[in-house]
Each structure stands twice: as structure tokens, then as C-alpha cells.
Length: 238
Image 1: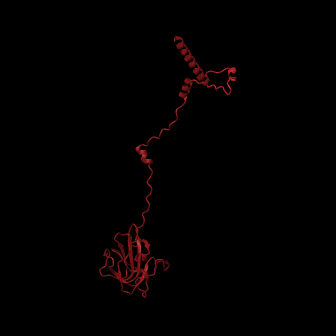
Image 2: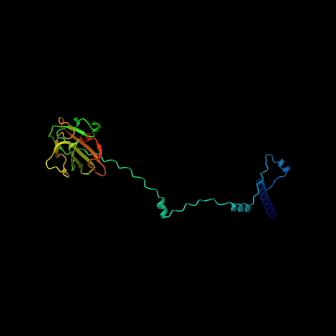
Image 3: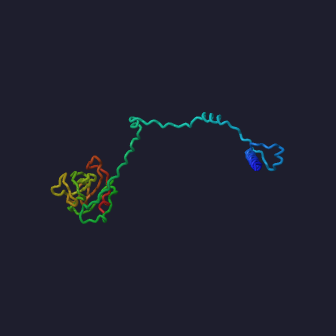
């Protein structure tokens, strides 16, 4: 019985050593002799691993400089911020207000039947107005509500009325009048359709062709009654 136990123990020890030898051989720790290599067909000598020193690698890693980090520029002071702040972009010019739709200055006339005389030439200059032929003495009506800015007699226009609209953006000009409406003075508030005068041929108009010379212009900032940007009045009457 004792001999059987000893034999089993010896067999286990031998098996352990055999397994250990196989493992070490596979890892290349045990190199067979040339004679044994000849008995092992297909066996290749494993590559010898390159030796390294862990302490040396650690020391070299410490000598590698850290990556460079760019510091952000310093914030400007309050005074510098004011000096370096971009100047505001210039504001775009405001669009011109749309001209209002006007009433007819001569009652009973269809604006669609009138010829557009705005671009005509008169005595070598631009006409920039609308001629409305009518019998002498026909009533002339205010085309919009607004005050009489000027009553004026000129060589070209004869007896005239300059009327500003309520916003003082537009001026309405009535010329070649035969006479004013009774009681009309500068500053009078005219309602739309109210009589302001009568058709005539004063100024440089032909006595044989009485008519109303009607013009519209946009006032400039200084609001001068004789100065502005002419607008074709006919489309405003249609």
C-alpha cells in the first residue's frame, strides 16, 4: 500500500516537471541543442526579445518636455475696450415715403383721359407738372388736406397757391389761377375737395388756353415752399 502511494507521488512530480518544461520551451526560455533541433521537424528558433531597462525608459520619459500651450491674450481694460470697439456701421438712408393718393383738382375730369405732360419741355426747361385744360372760372379743389404755405404771384406761374400736406412732406402747387377763393390766406387749413381758387391763364399761359398747372414735389428738410423734388402727379390721381 505504501509503495503504491509513493509511486503515484513520483508520477505526479514527473508529470509536473514535464509540463513545466513544455511551457518554458514554448516561451523560448529553453533552447534545444542543434542535435535536438534536428529531431524536431518544422521547429523554428524563437526570436530573442530585445532587452529593455524599465528604469531607463522612466528616466527618459521624464526628460520629454510637456506640450506647449499658448496663453490667451489679456483682456483689454475698460478704456482700451472703448478705443478698440468697432465703430457702428452708418445707418442706411431711409426710404422715401410713398406719395399719397390725391383727389382730382378739377371736378368732373377723369384722370385717365389726361395726357402726361410731366416730362415735356417748356421754353427750354422741364415742365415737371400736369396741365389740366378747363374753362376759365372752373373751381380748383384741394387735392388733400393741408395748410396754405404760400400765396404767390410770379411771372411764369401767375397767381399761385403752395399747399403743404399735414405731415409737411409734400407740397401741392396750383398755378395760372384766375383768382383765389374768397377768404383764402396763408395758413388757411384746406380740406380735401375744398375750393381754393379758379382756373385762369395768368403768368405765361396763353389767354386762349386757360388751364390748371398742377405740380407735386417732396419737401426738403428745410421745408422751403419753392424747393423740393418733383413727382409726376398724374399717377397719384388715377
